[in-house]
Image (tube, rainbow, N blue to C red; front, side, top):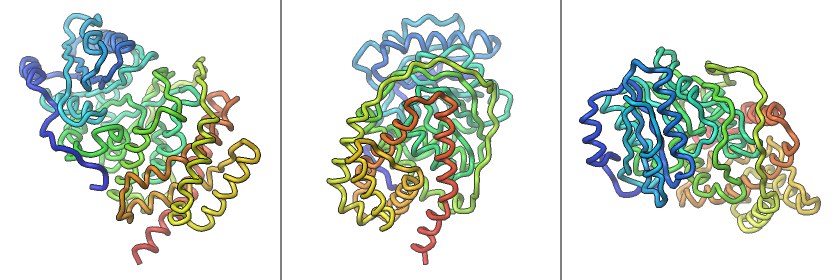
Length: 422
């Protein structure tokens, strides 16, 4: 595979978890919570999950699995101490295998498979805005056999989700023709058929075992014949990560997985033109007050300028000549104005250049993703400056306009593949 492998582990389940599974026998609903050093929030998430299961599904057999990555704080203790209604099964377990969110999910999928759960739901451990309705909304459409895969639809802090807004959403939409707004949102619902399918895949030695898991799950659901939908969850408030400083490993794993899957499903996305809306459940138009966090624009600028200077010879080699010429001009003008103006049209073409090169690259592909990173900082700086005074609807308009540009420029990407194959 084109993404990195590590030592093989046959299962993510430890012996004590296996004994818990054997004791229970089966479940109707499994809520999985991947966790690592979340002592401040995990108790709230566990309690709310239990409350939602008891409130909305009292006649079904339900359980909560906290799949922990070996937390060094009191995450596991807080998860056990959290109050949940009687009758809800609970287990906290350290998973086996590659450290990462994906392996945590693997343990959840394997558990759902063995317990033959009708519905499997996963929610992030750092959520502050989760309420019991989330559990109902993530479970009910799957329980009613309307979809196999539910992705979240949120209202978010305007600076939250920059990888989603500027890379993963527009590329996933353009490639596969479905407008899944939050392909890496973190909170999902799965049918038993899909959970079993995920558990049986041989990807747990790759970047999928880390932060590549969300885009992998979404892309497979879109391409392997499963019914997909979105569910409105209101505001997402969680532990905010500044795009200038906190997203290094996540960026690597997500982009590597995204590009790898492009190659895997090339014969499918080449035939798709335009995009459609998937069904969305429980949607209502509302205005919510979400505190806006700050973003370190100076850090974004510096990373963009210094990265371009360092990697300029590589950009000259990788990018289409006109794209390189425009990029160089943007860097020069941005330095003069101390303001980055990086248009979506150029950004889309540059990402398509890298996505194509990734498929043909015979050198270190992780290094190739490193080379994209300064350009991502530049586009993010431009995006953050554009939306700094925008409300939610205005931010969405910016994101949607950019996604439309990616769709319009898809023939540019297809032509690169066709010329290579001649």
